[in-house]
Image (spheres, one colour):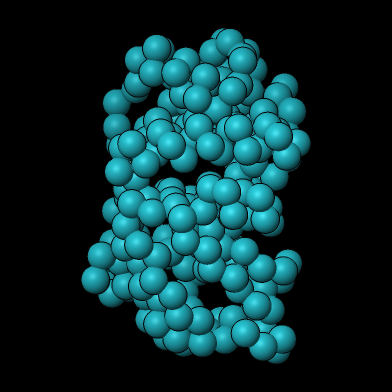
Length: 208
């Protein structure tokens, strides 16, 4: 799906090469500051490497329209953006940004159930806890059904048991839809139990 060839980025990454396969759950782990989140940002052109080249479905990433790329490869950051309004409005807004029509309420409720978020669609989103906001954002991205899910510590605010439960359900549903997941995580349990391919990024200057 994505191929990184000798990617470097200032003082953060040095000559990183990896292949992230289609329909696979790939986990990227490593110490803080090693550049894990930077790699995710490369994949939807939020950042551009200082050296090397990235390919998406065998096309140079730089030749692909950024808006179209971001509709196919949707990124969820560790501190998700929550918009003013209800939970329903927050779930629908991803589809709106993607140029899609609204989803039925039963689809929204199913997405909340998938991530174990027992909340009414009418509740105000800004009143949710940090972990609930992460789950709301996961539900929102799932409804969008992109080809690629770029997830940066998507459940870091949850306790370990809930984190495993939520991600196990979420990843199973994504796989059933032939989606590709590229996930940055600090959780060794998540990467070992749920990752199909694991990549460890060493901090620059520490060896590989």
